Amino acid sequence: MNLPRLEADRFPVVVDEVSKAIRSAILDGTLSKGTHLVERELAEQLGVSRTPVREALRRLEREGLLVYEPRRGMVVSGFDEQSVRDLYLMRELLEGLAARLAAERHAAEELEELERLLREAEAAVERDDVDAAAAQNVALTLQIYRMAHSPRLEQTLAALRDYIESFARAGYRDDCRLRQAHREHTAIVAAIRVGDGALAEELTRLHVRRSLESWQHLQPAQPAQSAEALPKSRTGE
View 1 (cartoon, rainbow, N blue to C red):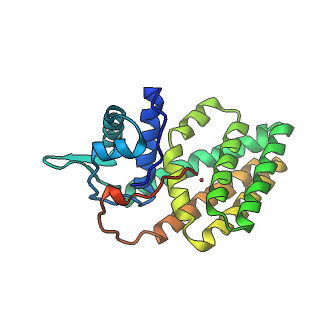
View 2: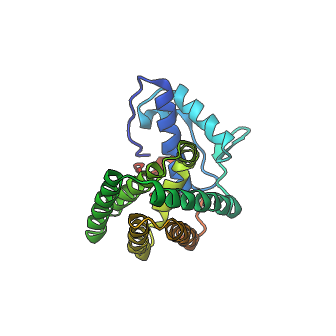
């Protein structure tokens, strides 16, 4: 594996980071169904003790991404298409509401920051920097959450964040999707700018549906692989 080493001084933080690294690899298809995960190997690669790795694996088992098998230990169980569709449906409804509220409630300085993030995303798209564009799109989406001025809504969306980021990044493997997503974000920002909440919600929901279509398009059957083949994890929408 080539996972990045992590700071080990704060146990809860380390468990969160280990969980996120493994979760992302499962959700974006790097670790396919049936892959056997070994605590010792994960701990060595991440530069942490086995204790936070063990806790992270238990957390992912509770989420349904791993399953314990006798004589094998933790194995990637993956996720079925209906589960993914349910996650996207939740995202569509919640992000659509966030966009509507952002259009109706935003402050001028918040809109300026949103416009800045959109420009940076455009620059990344123009130079075909998928990782940078994905990161900027995440930042843009989080800014819309904040602009909604609804702490409960933002908290609910935060619980889905790792799933949203991983599926979105996987969708960007489609050469056309990155530029299409940027055009969709541009239209959403324009609706927020003029305070059209209904349009912002409609465009956001369409954006999420198209993201699901892109993800589905890129789901060929993959053979199980060893965790040693796992490339360096990335973060990024």
